[in-house]
Length: 246
Image 1 (tube, rainbow, N blue to C red):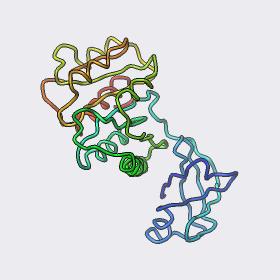
Image 2: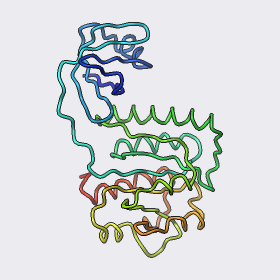
Image 3: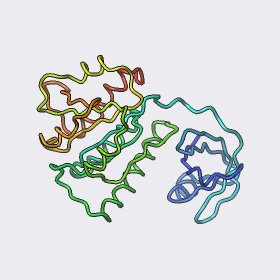
Image 4: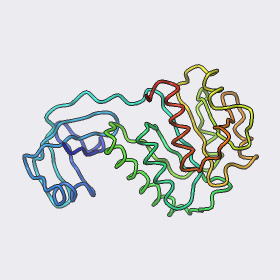
């Protein structure tokens, strides 16, 4: 059965309102009509069985029939802070990390980020990246959609770090402390922030900023990973270690 995300504010009582590109997809691509059934998700964990009641040019109205038990999301919230990469690599990173179970993604304007975005371009990219997360969540049957935040600067991300979060920064200049060693010695955290550099990695000055208790610079091994590989790889290691994968 087809699955579609509907923002919670578009669900009132037993009626859900579908808007945007999904209207065309439902009516013209899938050729569904009144009386056909859908699965609707609010992106925050609720799943509903619904039936199409009205189809209009700009919206589709559905009657909610029943609420289902949602598939379990990862109990451990992992936020990926991704140094802004070139081209469409960010879309690949968002897609794969959404499939794996990331909780939130924060694009980071790092020193070695080649791409420089003004406020307008950054807002357009954020909207596009959020759509990528929605489509990836649909494909892998997640019940929650990771939030893709707006492009941040270092000071903004660091100021918002929760006090008790485990903060991990894989860095090619770190030669002694491995990710595995840190995960084995740290009790299960409430949440994890994972910092990944852009092409060229983080500068020593940037890496030095991650220095408060609970923050660790780590190595992922002897091979240097591309930025579009490092995030999904490190996320997989963290979720696997804490029993969220496998």
